[in-house]
Image (cartoon, rainbow, N blue to C red; front, side, top):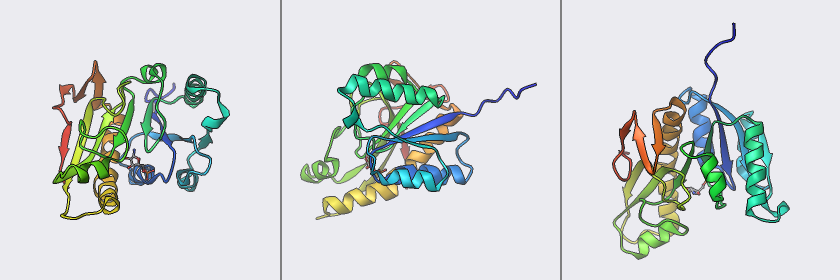
Length: 220
Ligand code: GRF
């Protein structure tokens, strides 16, 4: 008789350094994530995250967006690649592409993103600079389910830190990345693999209880 328990298969999508991917790889190596990291896919052939994945023995694939005539064609190829690898959950980790509504729909409730701001503040780019220029005293990062509203899907977990007086954009971005993003993303991916976090109609749930706006507050 075959075992009943199918292993959850996760794909991580990247475009660059992949330091968040590394944090997830490390958590998996420490047996914290009950899932297989079945695929790391990049739209950028030179992404360093591909090397990180290969070093961890994870299958990699490059789908270069320049090889496709438009977003729909690219996203169809992406969907095909994920189906081919029998992917259950998609984790966006610095994947610098906007996904079509159709793709987002196909992975509704099964796709997470990390965004370097305290959403709903500062969706989009240059979040650290915008926080500093606005005179904010706190900043952070949010993991959220992906919906067709860019960076605006329901939050799962959010961590924050104090902006230091006179702090540079570079320093703030490094601190948010290392002391927030690398801590909260593995936790969220663990919950995703365990089936503890879910999302329906723009609302995220933890153990079936609705999460507050901003999601679970993570303390350093
Ligand atoms: C992170 O700041 C993430 O929040 C944003 O892109 C960056 C990716 O960094 N979406 P890395 O590739 O994980 O190092």
